[in-house]
Image 1: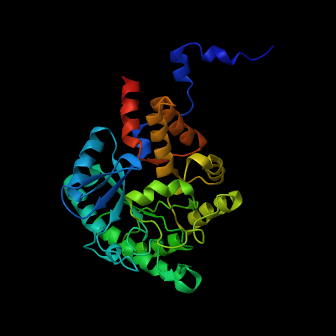
Image 2 (image 1 turned 120 degrees about the vertical axis):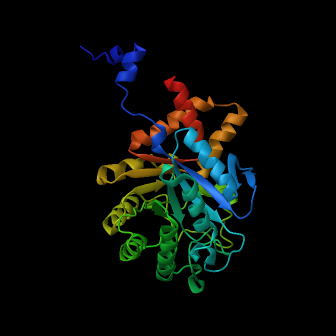
Image 3 (image 1 turned 60 degrees about the vertical axis):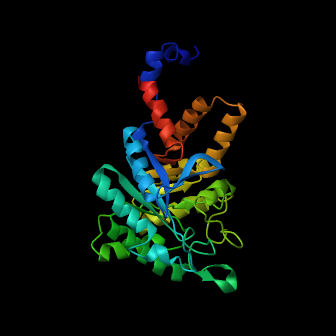
Length: 327
């Protein structure tokens, strides 16, 4: 006799009872982009609903997020002045450090601040560290030294978690070492442990103003063709002391998410990146999808693949939809 799987699908209450994968507002981290000035809230044309904001507007945004049940942000800084080594990122009076302090002063522990630790937003060349001119790439080990300095800036300002995204070899070990030596042994690191060189990042470079002035990032970000290397990258960061792993982008890499989930017991995050966001928005504007249903299906797919945490520009919309669903 064949199995009647439909027995548990015919009644909605039973369907809900046996549902295997669940979304909640607590699963999400919302990215915020802060720049110098006051009263600035500039929408990015390639990412409808996403803004560059001055710190006063960021505080208003945090208030709105809390009202939606969202209490975790990923903070990016966009300085007015950029140079070859990203000096603003190394200053206790830089845009990121000052904004962390302002958020903590206003919200205390109610908002968890995860800080993106990289140099591409802060350098005049748009690469993720100190340039190796001879090889037209980034000097890995020289960049580790300023990465340690940037980590201390974030920690001293009050960051709750540090998320290094530059894909330099040895980053996690270097950050863990400097944090531990300076009394921050309990500050967690969420590593961009498996980050691909992807065309899905295009709109992000509009909002973060971080496009490389020459070349690309293929010498340090991963080839999207490599599955085994992707798993090895995350396992190496776990070995070096990462507390949370990540796969970026998310949508085209759910096989990698599942592979890493099976290989590691650490919490696993996915970054639902700008190009993925922009595609759904464009499809909605064109009227070719049921946007809300596709959005929830996509987010559920990330969790079903093995993600515990989702960084997404859709987070506010998802929180509203989940609230409606629960009413």
